[in-house]
Length: 265
Image (cartoon, rainbow, N blue to C red):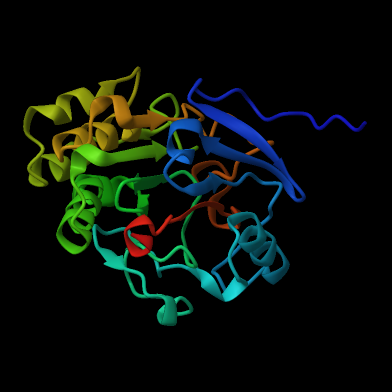
């Protein structure tokens, strides 16, 4: 029997699952609410959703949907989260997050250091996929996703669970002091001081802590927010990193398929 070397160990609430194309990272608690996952470099995706068709077909098979039912957005590094509709799965609105309740549509985001954030409400069968870079995080995109799920689908934040996949960690994400001004302008108050840590030469930004705190502030239970703890910049053999590779970097994909429980009730 062939042994497949595993990627680096994630937090204990995450697990690696072997697929025909390679390793897929899943969040064990979130799996009870929705089919989901985070890819590695083994599913080599570059450019937008119109490229690498073989890889997108492989991802669709993993998600359990048709290729044309992989919903995506044209990511703009903002804080807009939109509803995904089955008949519009091929469209790509300008936004950085998708939410939906159709079990035949998988929601996707593409990242190469930014945080792929997946949220699900098992009771309502609703989910969201979010691309949270520093701009989106400063603008509060995590809270925007929770708000949309509550407003459009009747979800209670207390019923939600969220998973943050592989992305650049505070260990490697050095930034200039101007970013603190952007976060303070976003209305995050004293929390900003927890998200920026002093380093020998520059500040270190903790996107994991920032998005986790914003989810909790929006009403998601602290015990239901899970962070993979895998830094894309630290593991070049497994993850793409824009900071390390520049414009040549490919993209990792975070995807989630709503269970549609409320539709079946």
